Image 1 (cartoon, each protein chain N blue to C red):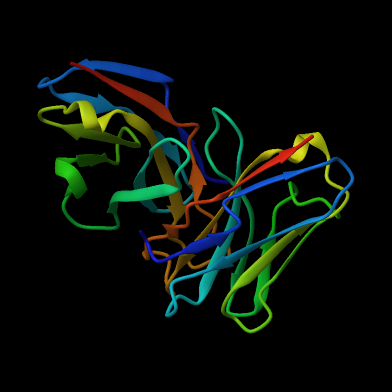
Image 2 (tube, rainbow over the protein chains, first blue to last red):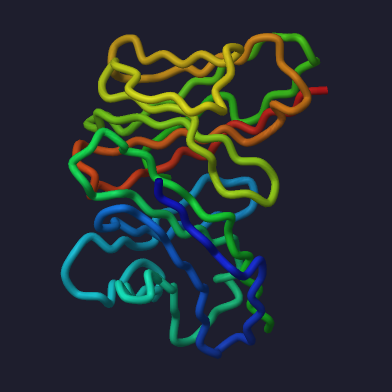
Amino acid sequence: AQSVAQPEDQVNVAEGNPLTVKCTYSVSGNPYLFWYVQYPNRGLQFLLKYITGDNLVKGSYGFEAEFNKSQTSFHLKKPSALVSDSALYFCAVRDSGMNRDDKIIFGKGTRLHILP
Amino acid sequence: DTGVSQDPRHKITKRGQNVTFRCDPISEHNRLYWYRQTLGQGPEFLTYFQNEAQLEKSRLLSDRFSAERPKGSFSTLEIQRTEQGDSAMYLCASTGHGKQETQYFGPGTRLLVL
């Protein structure tokens, strides 16, 4: 069964500094990996995904994520944080195998605070 | 706006009452998912449909919960005899066919059971 770990409940970063939100995963086969962002009282907004190919994936709002198969990680990054990036971020994984299991499993989320 | 809509956005009910939520997915999407999210947690999978067929149900989905997608378009999630522990955000997502497809989420229905 697949699982996702987001080891940090909260990350604080000063505006303008680079940010990293960590994610590690476990699947039996090859992973499809996703990052979503959630603002208060809203649904989840898709940021980016890794399916195959280049390990560095670029997404919305200047975010990118690096897939590292050996470390089973998919950390979210941004070179220069904005106050408006403050939100709850979720990493998610799906098994790419040809089985019926089509669930996406989410991590518990990391709250990102960008300090002005 | 992702194109997935949910109704109502908020629901307050008394314990023991039945509630029903509706989700309208993106029109060309054939897969529809329901999740539950409690405070401080990520979304937890409840069930999903491919067209009108319900393909999987989580153990979280007790017999008080039922979901339907009768014509393969919109879906409803009903909770019978609500309990205070049912208080949560109920999220719906839709996607096209294929595991590489992105799930797009609706704004959610926040349920409060008094």
